[in-house]
Image (cartoon, rainbow, N blue to C red):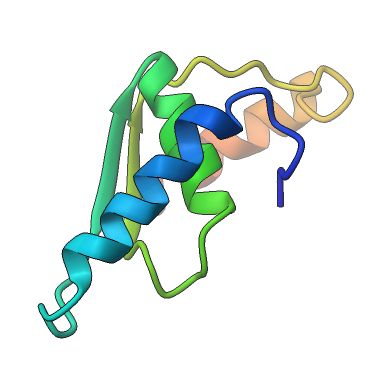
Length: 86
């Protein structure tokens, strides 16, 4: 969990709103969508929420960077190969 994110003041209200929207609505699936900075906020919100809150996350062009120690050329190649078989 990313509890010390600088975006917490933006992120936590979304989780509260989602929980409030679900009150009295049964087991409706809730998805969170964000683009660019909103994509980053959606990812942080989903990561900091109970696993039962969001059914899925759609982050289009999230404002994130990849750790170069993890995203080696070999790992990038393998990820691209595996994406073809999903």
